[in-house]
Amino acid sequence: GAGVSQSPRYKVAKRGQDVALRCDPISGHVSLFWYQQALGQGPEFLTYFQNEAQLDKSGLPSDRFFAERPEGSVSTLKIQRTQQEDSAVYLCASSHRRGRDDEQYFGPGTRLTVT
Amino acid sequence: AQSVAQPEDQVNVAEGNPLTVKCTYSVSGNPYLFWYVQYPNRGLQFLLKYITGDNLVKGSYGFEAEFNKSQTSFHLKKPSALVSDSALYFCAVRDDSYNFNKFYFGSGTKLNVKP
Image (cartoon, each protein chain N blue to C red):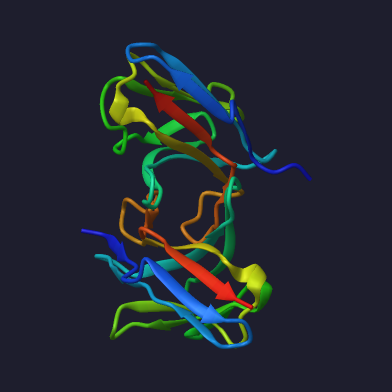
């Protein structure tokens, strides 16, 4: 079956522009996560959804970052007024259940470059 | 605070030799430990996990990992390395405290297997 998909794969934005990054999780997966991966670093947690409910947004770096999953499937991460420090790969992951022992399935990521 | 350390940025090994990629962790509760592998331009792929039970965990592609509670380590191992194992490896941890949604990733270890 299809894995987690993300679009666009690459995005170049001028500083100050708004961007929207899309994640299509594996069908039926309850949990959805967003991560930010800077160059040479491991992924850093941004936010977590259980179905349509955003249960944890403690990793969002500023109020310019906003995520939604209105119907409990597709999710969008929006970054307003992009800054150069927002340049990173944004990873989406989903897991079947909501248990702490569940492994996550990752998408290929969206590489955001802010110029 | 929860954290993961991968002390080696890079590990070099000859094909056919055993390999070890090191990981140590710090959590406030009981750890749930994971290893992921990342190939260029692809998402992270799950390799194996430790939840409870036997300290030696076997996973995909012949990899295994040993959980050591006293040393707070979860090193990844393989008895005989293949050139195709060359990739970026990430260790991750979550715990059983109230905030178990978060995965904490290490900074990654690049494994180079030479023919």
